[in-house]
Image (tube, rainbow, N blue to C red; front, side, top):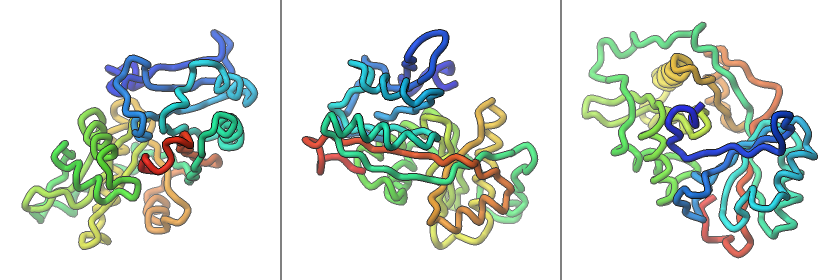
Length: 257
């Protein structure tokens, strides 16, 4: 859907065959300017009907740029083992993170903005000027590549935030390049006031109104977020979301994982 809407992250789709395809990989267009250490932007999404077709596509010459630090993500259980086997043969390290995958039903739970009616707080969207704050508060951030990546996400995709009386964000959620809600965060001193619920539901509704699926993922250890998600009635999917970060051995220690 992002490719059909201006393609802001310069993506393209690679298939094993057409029209009867069995494996799909999205990747950055080869002509796109690329930072070889930027795994945030150098991201691939994978879907396959036959895991053997996926492995053959990985092994095919010129489908993946194995000289860069990059990520592969998907929802299928064999993704890690197959990717790791091919990556190891090409001398890349593989770091896996696995999450609960969730789907929102924003049409059944509309955001309640009443908690802001008698306060100076405003429900609005993020701006690129807020990227530094998001970079400093994201567990995956804290580096220049993430800062630029967040700025690009804010520029290209829907976001929601609550701002205080000085205009500073205190709670927010953004959308990544695969239309997944991510980096939902509330500053510690403003927690337990309903802001996380408000921004989450508002962003889910905003994505849904534009025709996108409302989806996200959460770490098993993030009990606060899991409790919030259960409270607003999301569907926890039977599959898991897997994110693999692949680093050429020669680049180990240079990238920010």
